Image (cartoon, rainbow, N blue to C red; front, top):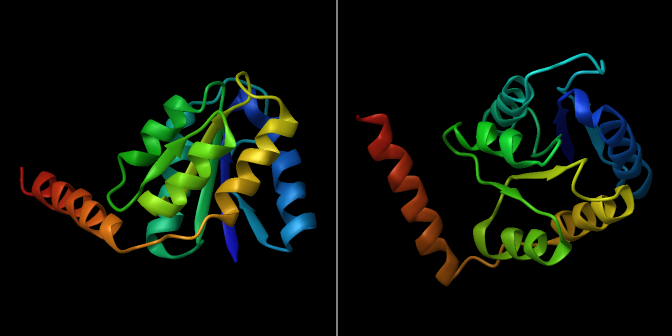
Length: 151
């Protein structure tokens, strides 16, 4: 499995720590789409880059990190086909995979400690989409995207 990871200047250290954690624990390849500098960097750049990599199939899933996780998650969700969840705890991360088939995760380096961030990543990566009744809602989200393309 390939995971895309992106970040802004606030989350450089978190990115490296999470990248190493995923590679060591899961053996997944983690591809960096974020900045490596702590100089001011606009989070929409890496949020969109990771989202485009997910949609194109360059990577299987994406993780994006900024100060709160909110802005970079919003940027990712602007890309059609992305379902990015912003989480500050593991339970929502797990259910987002099981019920919403999320393909991206965001969290905040200023919001969660690094050990909690690892727990969120673990929950998200372990979640398996249940399909069934949830697919109706995923289809509805896809319909919204299609309608927006026509505007």
